[in-house]
Image (tube, rainbow, N blue to C red; front, side):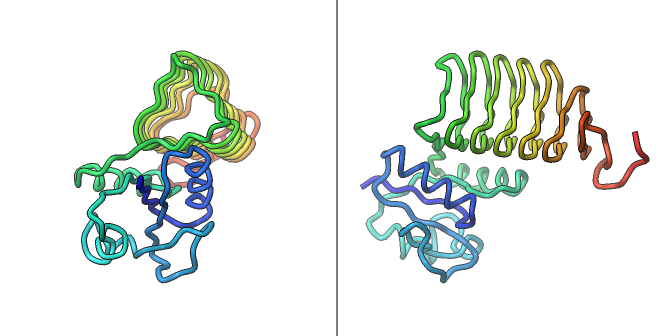
Length: 225
């Protein structure tokens, strides 16, 4: 029986579980979440807490690994940095980290999807694009030709990046935001909802508006640009 263990049972984890069920690759799903004990999510149990259960020992082993079969793992945590930290821990412990790709998503055969990604319903990834490990493409987001998403990037629902955009590690694009072609978004940068990015964004900035303007650098407010 193929098992999938989902790390995080919040709203994002619920949608990840739904997409995983639609894929039809797993017959048994379960969650780790620090709300444990808590009611099932979409009918699937929360089998333990993330922090004390750890990586295949303690209550996780008792509740979900009693038959000795090691599950696949997907980290369904929206915070980019935290998600990548947990992915590294599970990978080092020898777990498989498959990508969850909703069947309605369109992925070019000439695109590359790294391990542990989540690609939700009605997304598109076009030819020549690279989506780095642990990235999230949320509902209806699109990645056009020759884009490079480094690891841990998050595209929120309905966001769009044009051709040859580069999004550095753990950058985040808010709901409905857009990036024009050949623009680079820096590491850990955050682009607000509905923004239109027409210029490169440096590492660690927060930018909002149309066109997008920087309002914070590394968490500190800046003068109006």
